[in-house]
Every structure is written in structure tokens, then in C-alpha cells.
Amino acid sequence: MDKIVVKGGTPLKGRVAISGAKNAVLPIIAACLLAEGECRLEDTPHLADVDTMCGLVTELGMRVFPGQGSLTVINEGIKATEPPYEFVRRMRASFLVLGPLLARTGKVRIALPGGCAIGARPIDLHLKGLAALGAEIEVKNGWVEARARRLKGAQVYLDFPSVGATENIMMAAALAEGTTIIENAAGEPEIVDLANFINAMGGRVTGAGTRVIKVEGVKELRGTTHAVIPDRIEAGTFMVAVAATGGEAFLENVITTHLKAVIAKLTEAGAILTEENGGLWVRGELPLKAVDIKTMPYPGFPTDMQPQFMALLTVARGTSVITETVFENRFMHVHELKRMGADITIEGHCAVVKGTKKITGAQVKATDLRAGAALVIAGLVAEGQTEISCIHHIHRGYENLVEKFQALGADIRYQ
Image (cartoon, rainbow, N blue to C red; front, side, top):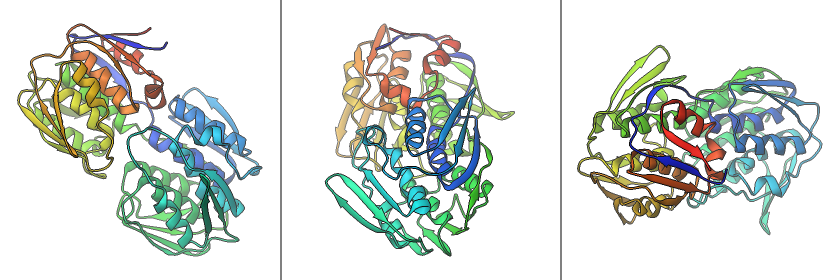
């Protein structure tokens, strides 16, 4: 299965169930390091990134038992404080074990993280926050070394509402002595889910989802059971795909309040979206209309939906302007879309997309996770056959993507 092959032109119709959120389950697995005993995580997606995080915490001493849509993580004592480089280099979220390890053991040595090459994502905010809690930190030769006898609550101000930094600081503060206030914190739904998990283990986190999070440290945390929230980016991907093909489908397991910005832009483009019974009906009215998009931290339009929406706009009526403010290198999919006949011009942090009546199938490659999803959508609306290579990126973040599109009637397969 080296490629995904798509034949376009078929409107998507039917029902599809959205999986648990990748960006929620990864920090939650890391947070299992904080608690003694057994944590059962329900609604967990089967993804390459989840496998990587499970492998990483196993190396640290956890026992992990995958189930059907669930994970059981048993912590009977942390046995290592240096996560293996082979795991950390694969995925940026591996860096989220820094805070829990520091809180539990007082020392960590971890490599600088890897992940999708979508631009600089510095870790300075993570380190600044942990240093405020009393950690002594040294960065040298591609490694971070941190030590602390006992973390202590502090006032932490983030220069940017970084999701990862908010998560790392929040997890470390959960076992710190005293109270920690995180100002200008990230407000993403995944932050709220992590806070709910920490609280279910006996933690005291309030304010998650706002710009000010308060964490009152406790002496110990215990195992618990927690259901992961639905993946808003997977939901958004299917919403865009259904609308772009002029189809009609019901998306099950969707929290629409997590998707207000995407719903607003799809509605502006001419799609019809109706909330119903814990899910969302999506209908595309072709041709869709051009819209302007500016990516912003939550609750703004998510950068993780920018490539997919660009694929839709390549065949919308009119000219759209997409402004990327989060990652400076998140237009790598533009070259691949242009191979399919898209009319796109890059001007600094903006992409000007002139809609065309049709794009045509071509051989393209996924340059990162969300770019891969965008190319699948482009293939669904293109005339002819599209072959997408480097699909390992897609497997990192989408559970059964091909099978779900097949269930909606798409002509798509592995090759």
C-alpha cells in the first residue's frame, strides 16, 4: 500500500462515523505517566502516531494494552527518564512526556522533537514554562536536559497560545507544590479534554478552554476511565470533501461547537449544514463560492484545515485569498495542487486561489499529514485519476480514511 488512487467525479453520499481525536489522545497518553495504576482510554483511534506514543511510554515503563477502540495504560512505576530518540524523532507530540516525567521523577533527557515539516515550532515556550516551575534546563547537542527536586506553582505567561506548551506546563503543574496560573494559554478543545482527564485522575484544573488556566497541584494522581473527544479535524476534512463533491452525507460523532469557524466558512461558500442528533448533515451546492480564510489559534479557523479547504477552493467560483498566520511553511501542498491544474499564486503568507471549472488527476505526493488529506479531496473533485504517494503521512492522523471514503461511494483504493 504505497499509494492511494482516486478517480474523481462521484458525489459523496451516506453516513460516516468520526473517530476519536488524534490531538487529544496523544497528550492524554503522556498524562498517564502522572498517575499510578490503570487508565482506560475509550474512543481512541488506531493511528500510526498513537502507536508511536504507546511505544514511547512502553519504553518508559508503562504497560499498554490496545483494545477495540480503546487503550489500557498501566503505570506500575516509571523505569526510564530518557525517551528513545527513535520515537521522539518521528513525532513532535513525543515531547509531551517532558512535563509528566519531570513532575514524577525530577529529571528528563529528551531529544528535540520531529514531526511534519510545516514550519518552525520552537519549544522555547515549553522550556520557559517549566523553568518558571523551578526546573533547571539545559539544551545542548540536540538534547534537552531538565532537573527539578520538586516543581513549585508559579505564574506563567505564554508569548503565544501554544497548544503543546500549555499541555506540557499543565501536566507538570498537576503534581507541583502550590498553584500555577497559565496566562495566554491555548484554548483548543483538546486542552479541555486533557484537563478533564487530569481532573478525573484527581487533579485540580480549572479554566481550560479560556486564556487563563489555574492548576492546583496535588500530591498524587490515580488511574481512571476517560472517553476521548471526536476528532474535529477529521470531521472538518469529511465536511469539506462532501461539500466539494456536491454530495450529501451525515457525519456521526461530531461536536459542532468545536467546528464553528469551519462551519461558517463552508456555509459562506454555499454548502448547507444542519446539526442533528449528535452529528451533522452536510450538503454541497455546486458550484461553491470563493471565500477568504485567515488561520488563527482556536476558536479561529484552524491551520490544520487550511490545506483541505484550499483543495475545495480550487474549483469554487471566484478568487479566494488564504492567509496562513500559524506556520510559515504550510503551503507545500500548493505545488502538488498546481500539478492538477489549480490556479494558485503564493504571495508571502498568502495564497491567492482562482477557482477553475475543473482540475485533472495527476501523480502527486503528500508532503505532510493535512496536505495528504487535501490531495485526497482534490482527487475526489478532479477529472480522471489521481495517484497520491508518501501516504505514510496520512496514516499518522486519519483512521481508515480510504475505507470511510469508500463507504460514501468514492472510487478510491490503495495500490
